[in-house]
Image (cartoon, rainbow, N blue to C red; front, side, top):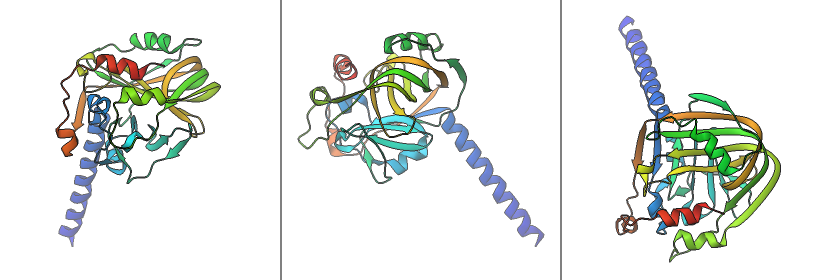
Length: 260
């Protein structure tokens, strides 16, 4: 009987330590599925489900198969912002062709500067990003005087490049809206793999609207930052992905799809 009790206690301790180690590992790493160059080339059919993606983090951004809207993950809940600007809860069986998530862990805090636009916000974040060769995740809740976001239309094969699709994007503008910016700073050496610099999506306070951020004006709030020094990347296994030429410099294309 005593041996059985010891075995149960040992098993419990082992499981606890394993789960703790796994949580610590997630908190210090960024998980990325596929590459931004693949998305730019029109790779819109991934084989990673959101139920599997959720195991790698609780905060992030990305998109959906067929490029069906913008993805925002906040507090472990995933949302799909479609062409109507509405944020819909994501089902676990849905798949993604590109996503980035992390188990968000606050390393530092700062006040959100008031009355600055998107460019001004990024300049303020530059002072907080002390290691330009590390990744940073941001969670920025606050009141925004103006918020301009977009979503993109669902695509059908044969897929067009992303620079062509964003010409048909739906743009939404909100004033004096409360919500949260979710985003990342990615080092320049990740060019071709992810979007270098800052990339943000937005979700309003009620989690009913959001999208990819094009511009904004801040009111007040706070900046929460998670510095990340590890990245785990998973690549699609599909034959289509295998045939893509991903070595091409797509810096100009990234600028085109990120701007207004």
